[in-house]
Image (cartoon, rainbow, N blue to C red):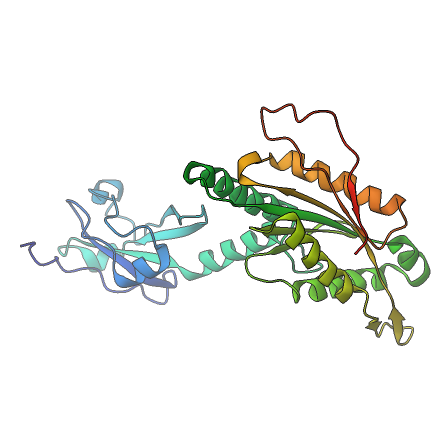
Length: 306
């Protein structure tokens, strides 16, 4: 049976960092393990915190020592930890308390959101979309080991004649249009679909486990939602706009899984085909070749007027 834990330092005072106790460790020897708060926050760090013999790092002349330790969750999310040691209160007690510094954690989460989201629309940005799509493609490749049928589709949507909106009504109205379009499309999402702002007036949509037929139907629904009148109230007075989008769709299956770059190139080419064919439509790209395959000569995208 493990012996009782030695006394620990009192919680930090108002002069120290604002913190929440996450783990208790003896000054010398192995870690005792995470508290319930630590398990809730860190998730995967459930066994021990390998922070033995920390007392050798601290001088008794210091009032507070803050060691910034970087923790990681399963998805690679990082946040800051602080080891607060109020030495005058701990002398003779031999205890340590690990704290999560709320202010630093909140600042990190804010920075992470800014790094992965578009500030205008609030949608995930290109970086977040690529990361999530690569994960979905990895799951698709894994499915081949169990002979599962795991299709995947992605689409690039480009607003038609958006430059005319900016030129006629100004960039403030253009920004408002992009925000409203993002919210309107986001409201149509189902399941684990992911919508991102790809850049400019272009959006990207990931549809995991959707084959080309299902994906085309979903894009038809989104295109219908987008075609509804968009009403704004800019400084110049009420404004009603009608929008459309040219959409390129690319799909791949588990038995012919394609690389992300190939899917994006196929969707982009199909989107421009839709532009050239008259806009306000979906073009379905020929499935790109799987990595390592020759895929044959390039073929023109199929047309799907939805």
